[in-house]
Image (tube, rainbow over all chains, first blue to last red; front, side, top):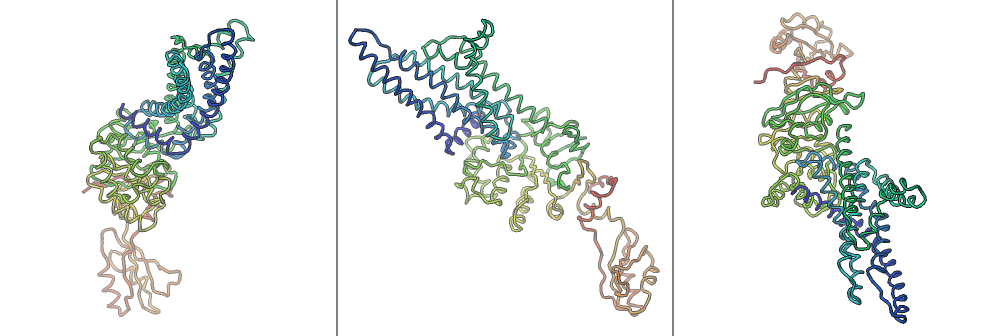
Amino acid sequence: MRNVIAIADKELRSYFASPIAYIIIGFFALPFGFFFYLYLEAFLRQSMQMAQYGGNQNVNQQVIRYVLQNASVIILFVMPMITMRTYAEEKRSGTIELLLTSPVTDVQIIVGKFLGAVGLYIAMLLVTMLYIAILFVFGNPEWRPLIAAYLGLLLMGGAFLSIGLFISSTTDNQIVAGIITFVVFLLLWIIGWFADSSGPVVGAVTKYLSVTEHFDDFSKGVIDTKDVLYYASLITFGLFLTAKSVDSERWRG
Amino acid sequence: MIEVQHLTKRYGRVTAVDDVSFRVERGEILGFLGPNGAGKTTTMRILTGYMPASDGRATVAGFDVFDHPIEAKRRTGYLPETPPLYPDMTVREYLDFVARIKGVAAAERRARVDTVMQRTRVADMATRHCGKLSKGYRQRVGLAQAILHNPEVLILDEPTAGLDPKQIIETRDLIRGLAGDHTIILSTHILPEVSQTCQRVVIINKGRVVAVDTPENLTARLQGTETLYVHVDAPGADVGSALTAIPGVTRVAPADTRPETGAFEVESERGRDVRRDLARDIVTRGWGLLELRPMRMSLEDVFLQVTTEEPAPAVEEAPRA
């Protein structure tokens, strides 16, 4: 565990030592703010109209839910930037030799790198909470569905990060890693679109495989074990593939 | 301390290391010598647990590097060919991180990093980013990283490559200072380095060990005979046949393309010193003795001989004193 923390700490520091962390956070916060503004504006206009006829409005369902759903798509674009360097750069610069000849196991290195990336992701999410805090100042949204939604974001991001980690471990070129990761994420996102136009079986399968599809329930404030399990298995699978990739690299030399 | 038995590494069809065996005793400095691409780095990478061997065994500090990699790595310090530095970290941050993953206890980490920075003379660069260091400093920080957890075994892959002459001397002194407490394997393709720092040499070529011995023995053994260089001032005399007549002399050849200069190479039986007889004979004949010196085969010659000859002569290890 001590080794895992040491590596996670080093990863997190290296993100913030270079401009990468700030660019990523900025790149994420900007469109997030844009969507936040759009949905909030629409919500305000609607609630003004509704006030005349007398009706009830829900900030959680009409603002937070949609903003976070859109955030999940932004995340898809940002994640490759976080993971592309993790292994590729260590291989390119030769520092991987230090890690692999130190008394730490491959799993400790992988989990450490994963947690480091998750750390940066959490920093990104913390920034978005500033927007949400505005809602709490001027209104009174429910905080429980909000927790669920953020848990969903965390799990979904974790799944992306573990897949990205694996792709980074297969190459020593971070640009290649970044592009492949982006394409894979895109596929995992749009695969759900086939669901509506294809037959019942294929539709169900593709819908199940879509990464963003599983976030829908979370965004509504529902924590479904099915979705938690989906993300947890995707994270485990990604880390497992990374371990295999690192090991096979070792044998091939 | 280090034992390597029949180590083999194949990359697809290419055999990078072929049945390599040797051992290193505690406190010894072993020179690992060979031309580029001979398999030095591959052997070292196997010893440090960076990659597994295709065949054979390697034991470091009593732990098999395949069966107990963590235990073996805990006792090994490794300086790869390119020092594994993180450009974004300062020297202190970097060494602190290495200390953590090498298992240096939190309480003594700071003191240990300070000691090592003093020892490798990088303390004045403690707050500099690794990416901004000069080649000499990078190499020293790499060395600092290798000795940080005070390992029993040090494996250094070309530690003086790319340094200027002054830095090379400093690095060699540092390495010599580390021997005794540490067992060291040092790879190089620079020959003087081996005779200056190492107690024993393994010469490797095309993945095979071609010789294992002390630098002195290697020079002497491969030489076979003693050769003297003699320069005589005797115009018109037949110096060659006169020298051949001296007991113990096996062969006399002109050392120069123009025999009239009076320079000869005189080979004698092994272990027999003919210098006194040679000098006396020349002087009693009334010739002038201008120069008389032993021609020692340099390690360069030995190296060229064992790495170019086909098939390479297998030189067994001489019994060690």
